[in-house]
Image (cartoon, rainbow, N blue to C red):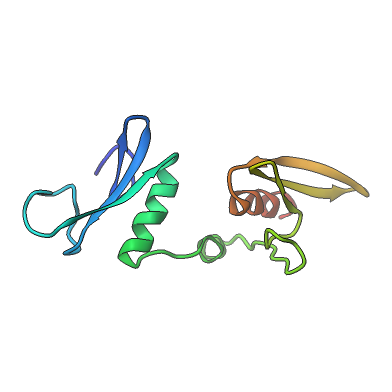
Length: 125
């Protein structure tokens, strides 16, 4: 296993590199033998790199599926541009809020709408 905890993801110069082999074998084991290495990009977080890897090898499950499988139900909204209830975009980030006793209460600011939706779902139960 590697230090990131994600298959196909390695730390590289303070960022996270995702790559896989075209023959489907794990790049960490004998990367120079057989198969062409496919560089998927450099990412700010290991999670983003892991999602890129999973999409490339066909293992990606959308976060809503993963969250629901873990017993957490995300609150979807077709009337919100983010796609999630009480999650709004705020200059390059996403904020989650909830109503408590008739007042809007700030939950937090997140890198992605999904992270904010998960925080909202955890806050409202």
